[in-house]
Image (cartoon, rainbow, N blue to C red; front, side):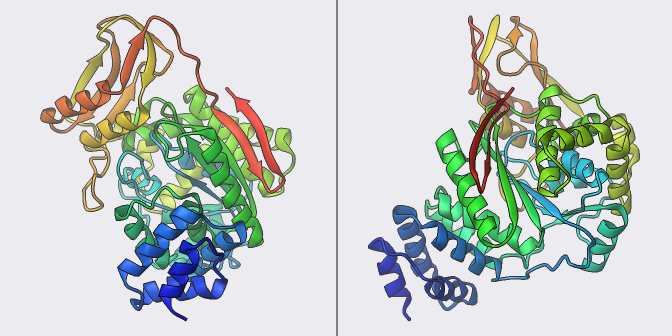
Length: 443
């Protein structure tokens, strides 16, 4: 078997066999297939696409290129969740404790943020002392005892994906739905959970900009999971405006705790209830109304917040900051960004908001960058809100005053204020399962 022939077959529109995919992927991981040949194959896939069966086989090969986590030592059904990313997306810190408080095991591996999208592990490490790297024994023991642990993704999970993604990033082949689906699902299959809920974000602040492509990505990921014996569903959620009002690590943790204590922003609370409900449904806890009632109950009785505190405490975190957000270390400086005119916020580009927070120190431009956990943005006015000239739209937080000018320029470049209130997108567009697509339009 030759890599040349595999590239030519896909270039000409052929369907690759598992053996051919394994030859290419495993050869690349081993160093036997050079970058230029793998780049050529990725471009051929980008241009020619893949069948569902082909994508499922590629995903399995990628998953098996590293460790396959066996969660059988953890009692009960294990449910995972993955978001395709966005600005102000702190849902894991809310829904994982909710679901665990409903007696469903959460043994989750999460990632760090890069660019304008935040990462769950960075948010967790904003809580002083929190360890996000545990031994397998510690991880399993914690999940068995308190029902939940969220840790950083092992470097040995889906090794092929890390190498292939780095190559895609510099060869203009990132935006290919079969490659996106196999990248995400290879890590989810390797992580070992029985059921997986996918949160596919759509809009300015997300990778998927339109509903058609978001649904297609969701459909392919659900098909992959189903083909490998997992229970999978996907929710298409809005990312034309940030969830909640806080962007930045400590700020987002504080807002997440407010939701768990029953007094968080309405949009973030509703999206989290929807996601938690669907995770509970995948775990076999009942129908939609029953599962939603369970999720609301554990918020109301305090057990979801208590479960979250137990998780952080078990991983060395100082839970006093969860109980009282004023105890978080504060940024040295703040700055009010004000409205230049009176009217409605007609556009507030989410990617530019996220990039503004990165310029303040809340995110990374390169993987080597350090994060200022206290940096970020609190939004006082969001898409569709009425604002008066001179009124504060948002507050910036940073440890250097010199950072405010560039962040303001970035934020304002995506801001449009007009005389008429714009139509607001729904919070959740659709649910995708193995049975098809169900339109939801939840506001």
